[in-house]
Length: 86
Image 1 (tube, one colour):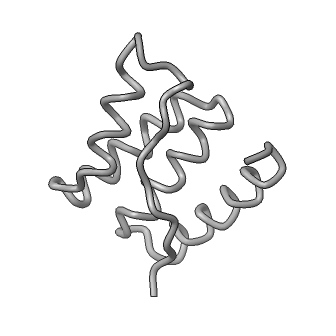
Image 2 (cartoon, helix red, strand yellow):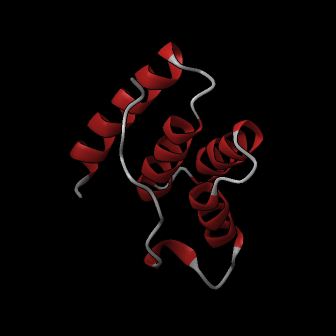
């Protein structure tokens, strides 16, 4: 996905977070987009927030582990299904 499309998606995820701040999936999606755009600190914050909201969320847990794994880097695919809250 190119940077323009990622930025567009991130705008949508940010809007979802504004509307549904307790939606863990929106935070995970935002973190995935930020990671791909190179905002690693922003991604970390979003993944951690998703886990605060939903401690058993496997996608956010895997994404955070991949982010923090120094050998993982941006070459590893992040986990996430893009879905917006109802």
